Image 1 (cartoon, rainbow, N blue to C red):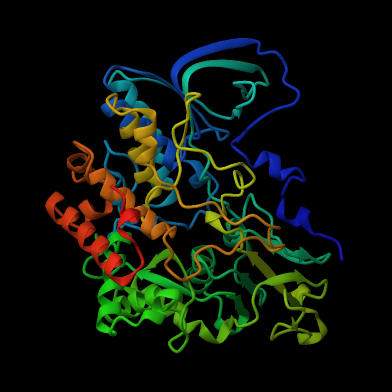
Image 2 (spheres, rainbow, N blue to C red):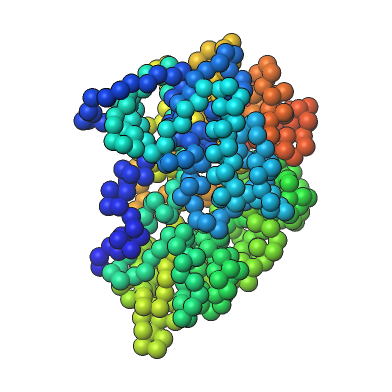
Length: 529
């Protein structure tokens, strides 16, 4: 069967166009003009905007910044997100250091809408200028790291003479609008990204099959049920891996469970279970933390008698979680991932098994004729734009800075601010800065799975697990003069958001480290300061 890529309105060279920049270019035309700046920041999304804001606040001397993005305005993936999306974490923990996002939103739980977030990021450009900062934003431009130049919206190539180049698109989210599905699609199948759902509606008995159980899939099902009013018997939802869902309700919608508190919950649950050694080599250690949090009302599961196996910090309130649970009869699970959609609309799974949708052949029409399939399988945190690039340090000796994941949930905006703050510390050497930026180990080399990687699997807690990398980094930051004080005054720092003082944060980190050493998950040399 043919690939129905055209139905997605994807350009055939999407892989090149979906990148914010390219690392090298074999054929580079001569730049027609040249600009100069202290910092060129490539990527005006959550990480890049946060980096620039903290840089402007804390640089020892005034700096000039050129902020460049392929999109016409700042805001990164929010420009490409579906209209009905909202921020699912509290607004007070998102954005940049200097300016409160919550002041821009009307939602009672402070869940900023797509338009509110884009307005917030646009306003920052004005605020920076009004404060006397020299920041130039260049939209609609693709940067070529190899030639240190970009092509602007008019097609002219502009060279950039920058003292430092900041790669803030390394952790760019993969979105269904830009990243086609890994599964094949039969001719005539109506496959859309979630952005096109509002235009489809619920009329004429339209059926929907939502592919993907992450936050995008959850949003799609909620939109179908709440906004379009599609009956459950006209929805099928393919959920390859059941997720743990973070509860937005307790003890307040303005709090959120953090990675450091999660480790503490795991240690407490492990001790309460008698510290079984077998738990340490399996998923049992982390699953015990989720079970404890579930008892406290801090996480939800989709199906009441099924243990989730995945966690990506998708966040819902109780009402939303209950509405998704009501969708349980529509959930297709236990078969893994879809490998193809046949031309008749049947689901073909990776194990070769096939499944016809409940309404197949109704009225003599195939499922493909009756159904709109919704692609929610991009894997937002697969970072496809940089996945093929080699891992590199945050701070390079060539004057390049790469914003990466140093600290887990919640993290994107926070990580951009941390990297910028460290950049401003003239008393730290390059080696010292990188020592404060431990990165999770790269994925094991080997052939990429044909249907793409699976992120967020709940497995054993190894020494290189991102949770422990986050813990070790925070311990080092607390030991860095002035950094702990800055963190606990930072609106983007999750422990500060949850009301922890500096002394309480330090105590929690030390308690976690001691507990992990006792449990055998860290040895003293691994603790790291």
